[in-house]
Image 1 (cartoon, rainbow over the protein chains, first blue to last red):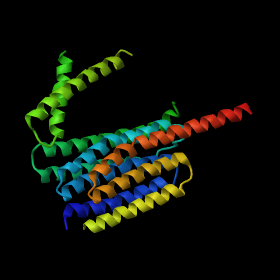
Image 2: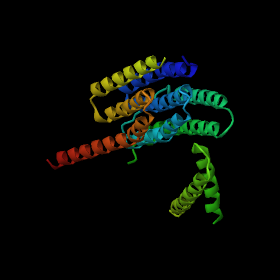
Image 3: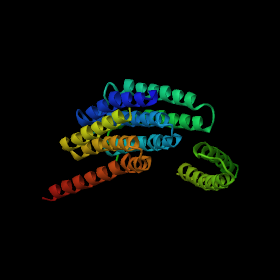
Image 4: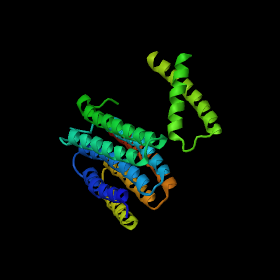
Length: 150
Length: 51
Length: 86
């Protein structure tokens, strides 16, 4: 029994299931935003698992996801621009929640690893994830306003 | 030239954050990769700003 | 605890895969598919196979949606052109 793993399990249940629900139904814009939140949830789960199993190498998974996840969402924003429709009302709160959760998990992981290169790496993953989430979410909202361009 | 050097320093710092063990070979490989990345970054910036 | 994690991620994979089958429109399926990739990556990590999870993330998060969306767009465009010719 490990507090990190318990947090990861909790985050999986509380985060991934709403994301699956959100991507499976509703207007296309809502689904894309839910997928964007899914990237954040899973990336944080990876960070928690890396701490829980005591394997710093697992942080690489979070790093790859923090870089490629927003890229995937941007692909959707560009290629589905003319069908995306309005961004959901919960887009802003969801993004704020994701950034807040990212800050919480990253700070906790950094404190647990102690000062050093590993902590800087975790912080880098957190910054990339938060920035990617905000950029992708903004792009999803802007794609509707500008209409299709491509 | 200074721009390439700046990029190389930044990319080498990034390399040091991401690798697991610091040893001499890693330093040399990191410097080399950072140089390649720096040249590519400068070329990309010129291509974008020259548009 | 690890068993609970495995069970949770297995359930998440099953739920997402079912959703991917139930959703009918290919563009929407691509969205569900990318979430399925995320769930699979978690499952692989929980089963202590981070290398498999890494390749799953590398391919599933950006490349697969891009391929599917490009194919859908091409098929739709061709369909529209044939309709115009008729």
